[in-house]
Image (cartoon, rainbow, N blue to C red; front, side, top):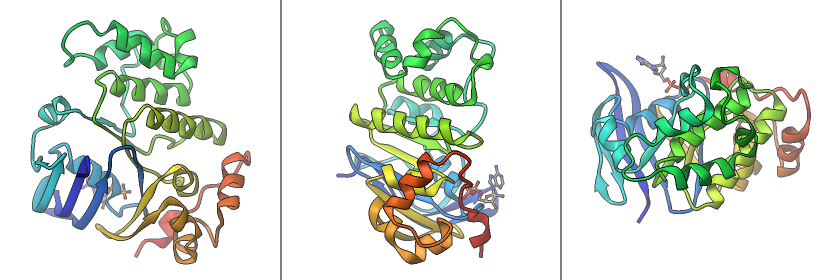
Length: 260
Ligand code: ADP
């Protein structure tokens, strides 16, 4: 049974329909990536899990249990953690205080978990007493992910974790995503840097105009000429993906150009 399923999902903000048929599942132990042009509804698909929009059709399931339209605080208590793209840390609190805030719905002593999370992010260990607002963009993203991990989530949802970061920090974030995944946490990630994201993903989905229109393994999507042309800046191979991830100054694919 998948950890998370979005089945024929339709919905939006108030009367504005954004999702028009979204089918996504994340199995235990998977990294799954959603790619697609700007405005396709990728972030909205993630937000749907948190009861943050008006679902008009379809269903969301967590380990088989229906989750559709469950309020955010209940979704978090069920073990689904979400790292939004922005405003995802408390800038005036220290790194350690941010992680402690992440544990606020956790019962019992959180110190052992704090030590485990710190171990995943060596740069944070050194800066544990520094206020989070003074960190680099990449390190702030680490704090945001660390905060979410304090709850030992059943699944972690990441909304564009590398947005606005330099290629060096993007590489660091993707390698941390792999490390988190190696601890057994399934991850659903929305990414603009489609090549790098697909190169670490088990599977991916292409969303266009509120619908999931294509799916495959990360490698299949990377090597699919149609996907390459539309979202990855031309035909690609995995070799290109690796080059993209290690080339300083690489300009990410202009995904917006594929908007219908
Ligand atoms: P993507 O993540 O694929 O770029 P989004 O899910 O952010 O796309 O946005 C999909 C559509 O939903 C866009 O047309 C956007 O303007 C609209 N939208 C996003 N957030 C809101 C909101 N809070 N209220 C109303 N419309 C929104």
